[in-house]
Length: 206
Image (cartoon, rainbow, N blue to C red; front, side):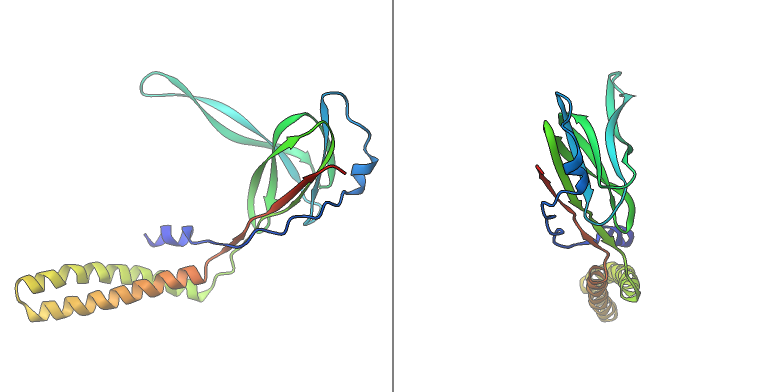
């Protein structure tokens, strides 16, 4: 329970500001694309970082009923080693993979490539995990408090039902202390949680 709560507790911040519609020099210097093609200029506000094109690859999986089903997995390939860059792509939808600052993963975005030349500027998502002692105490408090709450919840009704004052008192104290520690632990984990700021994009004609 504690591990699940700790992993799931990521505070989401407001998204990054939408990038200004400023075309990099490569956008104005590019010639017109061939017929049926679109010229996509990809720019990253956060610096010259790599951008990937992501393909969805099917994999056949045989079900228990004998039917074959397909599962799709992401297969990124380099589009440009460092944005800004220009890619001539058939008009239509493509998937682009952008790095996440602070995390070794790609964030995949659906982009529509129009005929002609367009610019896709992106501010990257940001993940920060600067947690410290408060989060550690929160994990300890949640673990101990959860256990104490369950023990108290077991002892208290037994003591009440059998008119055993000692067990009733012990159950009440254990239950109250456990709930208090559990509440503190959850608060501490949330207070000192990693943060995630979603990115944003602007797709425009230069």
